[in-house]
Amino acid sequence: MIVLVYFTGVSDLNSLEQLRLVATSNNYIATAIALASLGQVALESYMAGALLLIGLFFYDALSVFQSDTMITVATKIEAPVKFLFAGTTLPEGGKYPFGVLGLGDIVIPGIFLAMLREFDIENCDVELMYDVNNDENEDNGAVSIDYFKDAQTPYFTNGLVGYAVGLSTTFIVLYSTGQGQPALFYIVPSLLITSLGTAASRNEVSELWSYEGARARGAREVQEAWKKEREHEKEKQAALTTEDNNKLG
Image 1 (cartoon, one colour):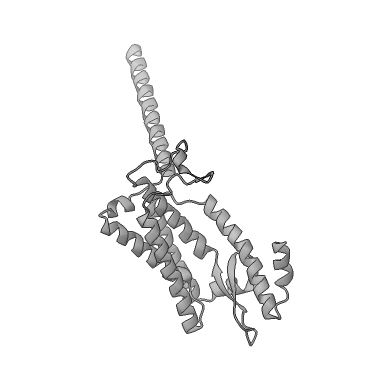
Image 2: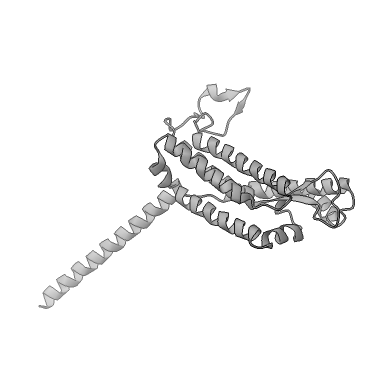
């Protein structure tokens, strides 16, 4: 139903009520896409996440400040791959009637924040903050599915604050200048400053920078085991070859 409302309304934007209806239906769909993406995509190391953010920082800035590529794509392609914000009045002169926030400005920082929470969890003092067999975990018959709901998450919390600051700065500059702004241009520095600042305050900069997720560590261990097996096979084959040569001699 929401999809039908969106696609039937997007072709007729002649009233403020219609603008708000289209924006609301679009945002419902975009939220579902964003949540699905956050559930499927993950970063496996802080270094990879930081480099990804830095690369997108320059890409976003160049696409907006040096050309109109990003703004053209955001305003010409109507699809629920962005969040729409309707104003209080109809725009004049054929201007685009919505404020826009791309899904990438939510999903990319989101997977970075998820990685920070994973780092928090792996560094918490108690390995398991939740016991499924403990009756004290039950609250009116409801059992939490978050095993680490009571864990301290300084990196995630500060990163979330940094994201909010970066996003707020984007909208402040947007409404102050009246010009489209690259959200990641403001979000990326906020995320990196808050995460590295938290690490510096806790004397954990090297631990954070070298952090790898469980899947990355598992993949590296499998690769190292495969290399050792290959080396062992080569040594075994070389020994057999030497033995055969000695017999022939």
